[in-house]
Length: 273
Image 1: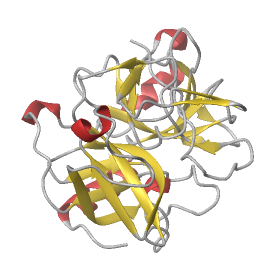
Image 2 (image 1 turned 180 degrees about the horizontal axis):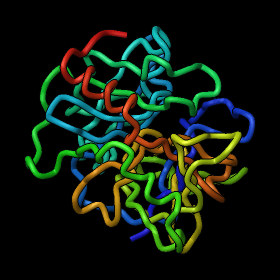
Image 3 (image 1 turned 120 degrees about the horizontal axis):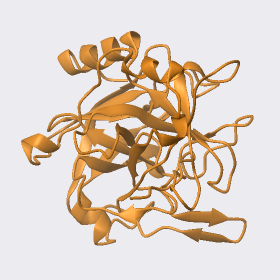
C-alpha cells in the first residue's frame, strides 16, 4: 500500500528547507485505520489549519507539536470522525460536520519551539467526549529507543513504515487535489538521524510514486512500524522539503524517553494550553 506525502499545514509559512507536514500522496484510501482522525485548528475563533492524529485511547489523540501549537496560538480545536470526512460534509475549512468532537485540552511538548518547528514536534489532545472504536484499533507507543537499531542496520531501503493521514493527495503551482478522506502509504526509510538538521529525533522517509509519501494536512498523522497492523507508532509526520509534496518527508520519533515522559504525563494529567 502507498501513502500520501507529508508537508505542513495548509497555509503554513515555509521554514528554511522544511515545511510542516501535509497530505498523503500517491496513496490509497483506507478503512483500516479508524483511529486516525482529522483535526481542525481555529485561530481567533475561525477554522484556519488542518492536521491528522491517532487515537491512543477514546479521549487522547497523538499528533505533531505544531498541530497543538505554542500556548495561546490556537483558540480551539476539533476532531472530525471518519464519517464526516469520508462523506465530504465537513466543508473544510469553513464549517463543521454533524459528528465533530471538540478538544478540551491540548499541548505541545514543553520544549517545543516556535522555530524551528520540527524540534520536539509532538503534541497531544484530550477530547471533550470519548470517540469509541474497536479496542484493538487504538495506537500505542514503541519501546524507548526502539528505532536506534536502524542506525547500524544494512539495507535501510527495505525498511518501510505505514503512514496514514487526511492530507492533500497532490499539489503543484496550479493544481490541488484533496478528497478529504483517510489515505495510507508505505514510505521507505531514507535516513535516520540527520546531523546538523533534525538530529537524532527524526527520520527522513521516501515520497515518490512507488512508495507514496505525505503532504499538507498529514502533519501529526502516525507512521507505524511495518504494515501498521500492530498500530505501534514509530513517529508522527512532521515536515516536507518542498511545496509540491515531493522528495523526502520528515517524521518525528516518539521512541525517545523525554517524548514518552511528556506523553504519559499528559495522559495522567491533561492540562490546558
